[in-house]
Length: 63
Image (cartoon, rainbow, N blue to C red; front, side, top):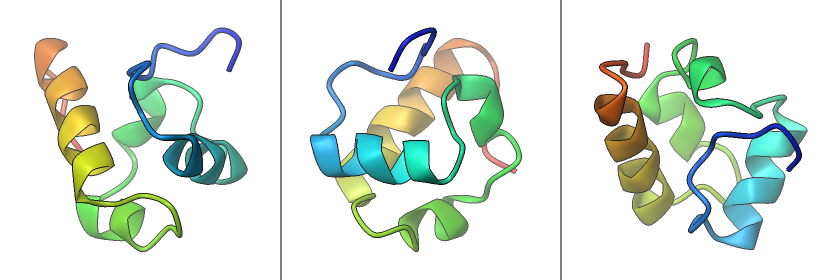
């Protein structure tokens, strides 16, 4: 994803699911709950954990 600051080690299914939901940057995740993200087909516990860690590095969190 161009201009994306999402973790590079996400699986392809998670990347596609996030892109389809309009999530291209970490800041986009702050409007989503973990539960809502987990409901996206392709976003599993491993992807959620990586996204949570990336947000925490920037002192941000899910909604």
